[in-house]
Image 1 (spheres, rainbow over the protein chains, first blue to last red):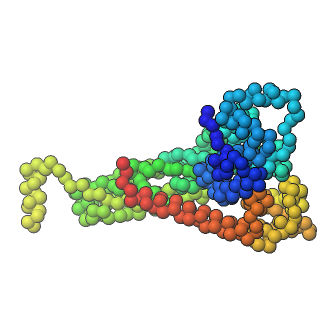
Image 2: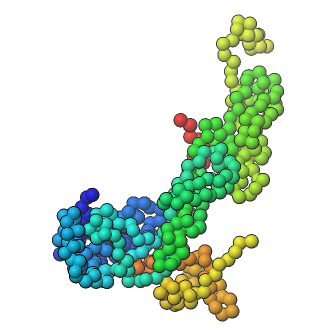
Image 3: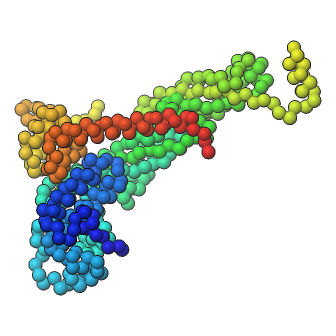
Length: 295
Length: 99
């Protein structure tokens, strides 16, 4: 466990007055408050640190203890024992900004020195929604193609969610009431799940449309014919027009990706033909090509 | 049909220890909407998260109403830009070579 320099965190020196502490804290709280920096994990971490620093330095009892034993935090227990006969610490504690943050986000150093968070310092005992949780879920394209259920473990709790077909890469869905517990009887926060959908090796997706390439042998491309190809809906037969050019594109209506939350609606599948030139030709085949080239 | 959950403004103010005038000012600036039924103001539960954020900004960070308006506007712009980045990244993936 490392020593945490609360003075340094607030950017003040050891002689700082309560007013200096308050000003430094307010300035930093405005900079790092989670409401002003949504989805910024670094800001959240900084905010927790400054909250912790303020919790200690704005409470004369805690500040005294920190100044006395801070660097020798292991001796804090001894300090506690000696103080046991004395009355409980005063209720003063300065204002600790809630910032959609539940109690308990304190460093090991703090827990060791003060034995957990104190709510006594909150000047506004009001109801607040719990903290919103953010999670990322990795899926592949096939997973995202069908509506399916998945069990997640968020902060030790198992949650079974239904992921609707057609979810987009980077899309976030809200699971109400599965975030942090409300403060002072407030509503529980929400869980936000952001989906990260991995690229498919053969199929690309843009919105509800899919893009893929189908290999075509030279003879079918020239003379026309029929090929079978795999799609996410299964195998389909394609009629190839004679004299099909390399790179030419066809659209297969309704064979694309399911439209999010619109059951039965699908995007389109665009297939580009990649014509494969025959290799390892026999002498006879070569001769035929030569003849063809002269005609 | 989607259900609407309404919370009486007065009840909300008591439980959050705030003045009713604060809610009225938010409504006047267009930051929240109040539904009036039989002369009683109600807040849609869907606005709760945003409203509690405004309370924290105002009462805890001492940001005034103009500041809250500006912050809300800028955060909305950031949000829109982030959505746009996601859409552009997804489009870019079309042209990326699979490794």
